[in-house]
Image (cartoon, rainbow, N blue to C red; front, side, top):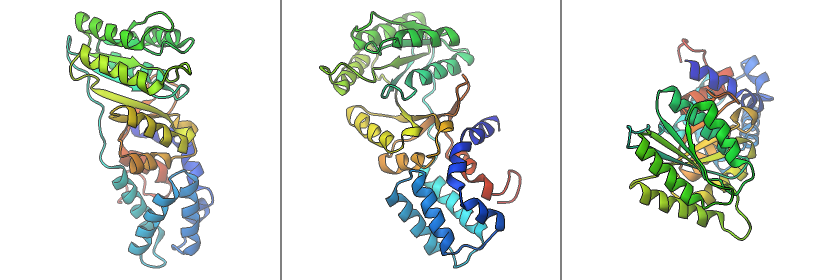
Length: 312
């Protein structure tokens, strides 16, 4: 229940952006007519769900709903279809056991919230009583190691770092070796989000992942792509580029609390087929939540859906 309310509060801006002029329709309990369909289409497109997806979705609903249907049928049908689009929750791989760590490689462009996500994930694991190792592999960005070290101190995690400009793959290798020797259950790898123009980011990332696999067969067990929800369509393009370079197992969607573009969630799942595993809904250490599709849809549409405990 606590996570559900945190999510509800976290998507307040997206919820306000979605409803807009639809709020008057909900308040007056009008039957569904052509004006409502037009407003709904505009709202979904403006939420950055993508025109093609919106047209397909509304076309399906219009074929199913009777003319001038009670609006409660529309919202329940929309919620059901959106939940189906997102699919079942896909949980994060759990940490391993002492001496057999699960390795989480965290990738994404600078400014997406990558380092903050790592810090929050470390805090989560530490609060569960686990030993966590961080690898400061973003060696090309000024201040990146210092920023990650602050998160390590705040969360109580260990950290391995090298000099600025060092080989990121060497940092990852040393972190895994240290975790194996010291009985850590989780290793979280920070990776570069931008490199010098003479070096190719994606080639460097592939190299890091190859070295990780040599250091610990089967690793990384999760490759998490961090995307900024406020960037809309740019996030989709970033996901395509990173997906072409490595096997992304899940997406972390950050800054969801600062975005009026909640439709990005559905577009990511529809166009890329990559599950969203975690969402960031605030600046607090505990504001990194497991993504539960049904809770997200209900939080977005709650003004028009029955309250918890009512018959649906």
